Amino acid sequence: MTRDPHSIRSAASKVSFLGAAKSGTGELWRMRVTTAALVPLAIAFVWIMLHLVGKSEAGVRAEFAHPCTAIFLLLFILASIVHMRVGMQSIIDDYVHTPRAREWALIGNALFAVGFGAAAIFAVLKLSL
Image (cartoon, rainbow, N blue to C red):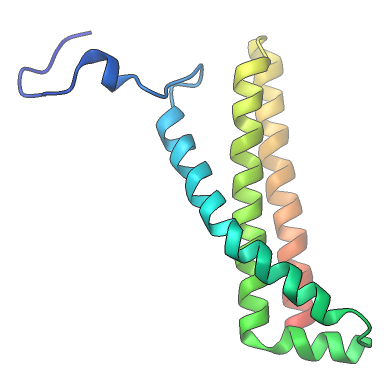
């Protein structure tokens, strides 16, 4: 590794939080941001779901038609999917050692996240529109 003469960072600080995938800092920040976002969004999700208990289908549709409800649910879904994908990617990178198996596991993880996220977003949009 060549050292940049203008950099004041040590060699150790340049590689901090880098795991097997060499992208640890980005994953760390995505996990922290989604965790912080999920705290209030999860509270809002539970409150919305408790508010829907006992309502008819028309009542649920009316509740989902409110923009705030739909927006909170969509944000909750997006933050949850990103958090899940990054967490599973970290586990796969750390514990799957065969390159081909790691590649397929990462592809499966991405496809599952996109598929599950698309289905959940579609369900919210269908109920809210």
